[in-house]
Length: 264
Image (cartoon, rainbow, N blue to C red; front, side, top):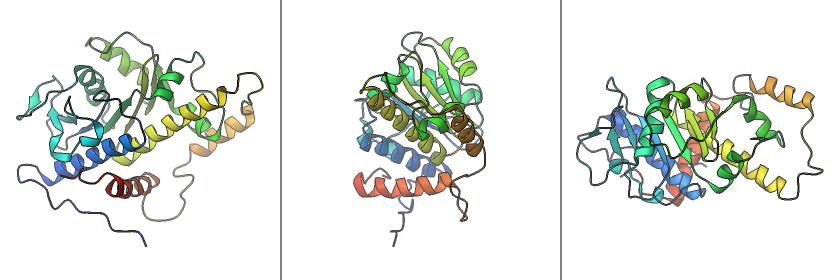
């Protein structure tokens, strides 16, 4: 029997119920990313839009590792980079540049994740990008965009090109840099970055045996996967909850088991 999830009853009085729910989900996202080895000391970032009309978003305090993040420690910032409220730590400016661009341009980008994982960086530097080597990659490639490297993301004018390159996609490889995924809700963003990171790891392992003789999926199969994945919830056909909800609920249970305390 699946254990029940903890509720958000420890919500501090100065947060609305809606904001606290987003904070708890985002903190769990950080903890899970650390469990999977996608953190990078105090660098890289995951953000979430705060419900309401103010266009604020939450991001990690610059100074805490992913496995230290809690719901209450997340920093609230506006689209101009101003911190809302008092915080012990500031934020990573490069994180602000990347995440503010996407939150401002994409109404559906409620959660945004950007990582510097070793395998993600490796594939981001591969001239051919993500290759159709396995079923996971085949499902991703039609939905994947690319953004060329321009240096450390400190220049505000890069935001225009980043937004143009991501277009309407929800998965991106930042060339010579890393991975990025967005979602309309936490389960979608988590599932997207998980699939992209796993596909990058599979490619690195596959090509470690040499490029010669590596089997590229047949064009007919690639087209069939594109057709199959265009259907709504092609894998989970039964049940009242969406595929993304099921993935997130299972992942949240894992966060409670292996990295408790994020909901503080």
